[in-house]
Image (cartoon, rainbow, N blue to C red; front, side, top):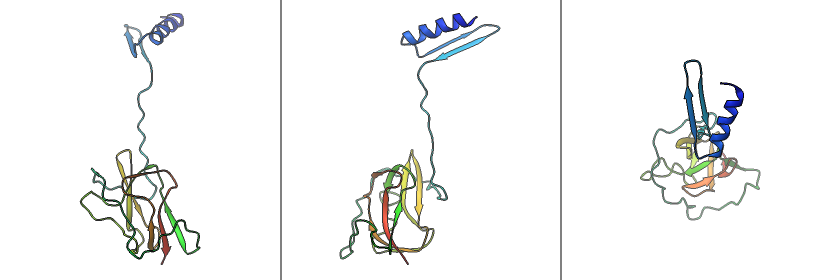
Length: 157
């Protein structure tokens, strides 16, 4: 089969609803596929472990504790923001029946899990990089997050 015949076959496939054409002889095998197969890419946050459990349903929204001062942004030097390292869905607890990992006012240790960001069915635990106090939980449970979105406002301890 020469290139002219192959070009003719490609034109026939693209001009019709055919998505795949395959032809095989003793000497050659020709496969023409139209469109693209979906590509699945898994992204894991660097230096964070993944939780093996799947989150089935959203947990109740996380709200600030009474008397806790809400902070819009870490304008003060003593506050820092914990941001999402990936695009996904924010979950405050490991499962709908479980308590939230952290609440406003909690003091967390280095490596302690703050939340989960689910990306393509992969549960990425977001851990504290330093000892800190939770000042504000910026996102609500089951809320979509983008790369770099603020998840928590914290104060180093």
